[in-house]
Image 1 (cartoon, each protein chain N blue to C red):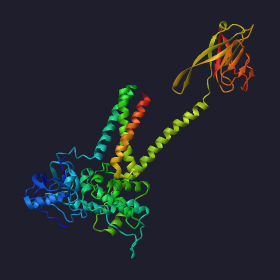
Image 2 (image 1 turned 30 degrees about the horizontal axis):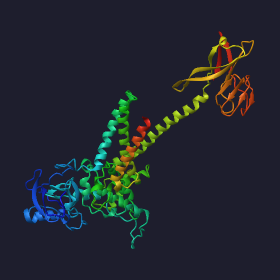
Image 3 (image 1 turned 180 degrees about the vertical axis):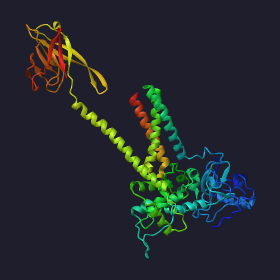
Image 4 (image 1 turned 135 degrees about the horizontal axis):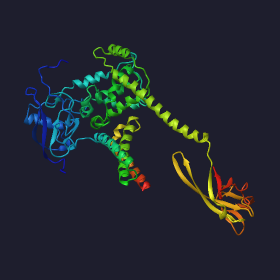
Length: 113
Length: 421
């Protein structure tokens, strides 16, 4: 189909552009993606502190909680990548995994201290 | 919360762009009295604005029953069909309506869908039969391919997924969720003849997905393009070392669809080779490292000659003749890098009228319980199973199979030393 060259198109809008509710409209999967990146960087920081200052309960707590969170988000992707969990259940999967992660965290933490 | 069936006045902000004016576009504000929010669709709202307030408002629609995919737009920040979204679906307050993202805007809410169909073409989103059949092919509803494809053939090409996909903005070559979903349905189709070619066209695009699943969230037909493109990757993973003949594939594409520029993405081929090689290399390194550590751990202690050492028990003078004494000995043990101190009791028995001492291991020869010397009975006794030994170590009673173990001893500078393995 021939396009009318005289019509001046507006450049495509980007997702979130001109959107006053940009943060509210950020979907849960986008948050999951973002938080996995953030937790990955945080792990590097906390791991460094943990290795230089071992056996500090506060640092162990922070490291364990970050690693658990990162693991949960990673499992979410792995389970969907391999088609083990259908992608349409992504919200339930994320919620379920975070709950499992929280329970595991509590068990491990009580086991240590 | 207001009762959604009640009459309400809503403010509707609609994106406006006039090609004659150009610029960035702006939002126009309309106030609209809505009789019943639960039966008023966004399409109704737009039509009413157009007829009652501003006849220049441009938007697309056709079927009004969410099967044509013309009225895809961003409603309150989320993509959807205007005809499928009712006002009661939305939160209260202002309603914001804007055109789909990631498509050039022609006017107001009308976008140019050309990029969408170009990427459909690039993904070879058409059916090319393996053989020309005169009768319909029979695909059973319970066959694996039919069950895997689900209702994913029901895409109406509304473009909502592409608009919701953040990656569509960052990768120019990214075919987008819809095209990859189409490719998925055709790749699983046993009747289709362009399998290899399609795979070569779309596989690289699949890796641009960051699994944010926005497409899955917004699809008005409840399709999950994320699942589709992940399944394409799974299909590819089942044949990781398959060689792709680029020239051959380009020829075939030209033959099947001369108008489509064969754009076999060569980086994808090298990417796959790179990934296979890296997987092998990293796997190899891990295998060598772990295997090395394990074999060293397993073999070296067995090969190393154990250096026994002499451990001090005490001075000869401390042990009167004819008396059995229990004393602890302690020495250091190094296990790999770990050093620890072992402390255990031994029985020292000095015979009458000589400097000779006998040092007994305190472990019972039956099941290695620790023995104790009973000075009244003049016997070594085991509490576990009632083993009894004479002061010279012979078995008196109970289950022990042999006499008590003795240490190799020597006396040096008046000290009694025992050989500890």
